[in-house]
Length: 471
Image (tube, rainbow, N blue to C red; front, side):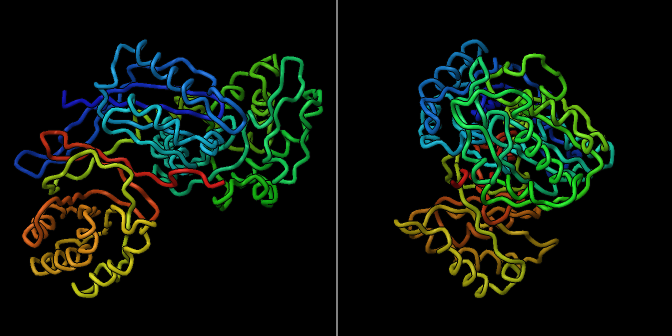
């Protein structure tokens, strides 16, 4: 057995809060006497927490102390301590990510996060983690097909489309089971402002409702999901419920899958429509009865309500390539924004490359000046010695303002050349320096980089997009 990392996943969602702990096993898959290629060969879930309702102080404020108590108790029950955690992710998802004190909650959980845990939330990352946690990517790969995965929780439906195992699109709809909350007698206690924004008639707080009375609003949300899958003509419903700041191009798909709390209500019909004090049971029943969704293959994922937290704990972490270079770095490095050049800029002579980098550093300046960032490159296949030297000069000169501001030159390359590039840069500058490869990113992404593992040959990384929802 190879080296193992203990990974934590904590998901604080609109409806529920959960935690899992997993072993990630590392394995060198390279042939003897060749450059090591360390990969995560196995993921084993060791502990699944109970499913807790996310504690709220009001409709707009999360109970940070309540969340902390839940996580502390689940750690105690698991038999593991926070000090044992090597990597993982804390995800604040759905409508919860829009609460006033989302960052305060992350701070309250810092003592349980270990030295290398993602503190992030957003529809893109959440969509990917849920789909991978449910196994939609593997199903797509194994069956050579396209799958659209819906992760439908309390406040949002996150979409991830995989074609032959490759992620092709992500999106998010404001469709969820707790957008309308009810008391035990069927009286409305909460209505999300989503319905007013979408122009969708919804009941009023205090109104007594029945399943028949809620059918029109439920049907409208299901139609939005059908249009997202390209199974219903038009996109009027889709556009009405698209989360602000996201987009989606509907195309007919041959297969769909579902996860999230609503998924359990699709596959396991409940007789009590008020079982959870919301519309989740009715929404699940309506999806199950949809003629449009019955036209395509619908497979049940390996995880439903736990898909996001399993994805966070078992699938958020990846590894860099093994031809890396680092000097005088204090790991971990967290929430580093990515600056990626265009292909022509990257291939330009050293002077033009330097000018392009300096010109774009201002993209990431805040009120206090420059911030720590990482330069992302595609890299070149079999570059000459002269080209590596020119690339090193251009990067070092371009990042000089960053160094003067006290930040570390960090370069992430897709191609397998970080070690030689780092060595060339090290000859030109003193002090901390980090070059890693095997990492594909884009502008708008962030990266977390953990302490070296596998004998120092690789770095655990998490690539993140859209750190927080925009209201």
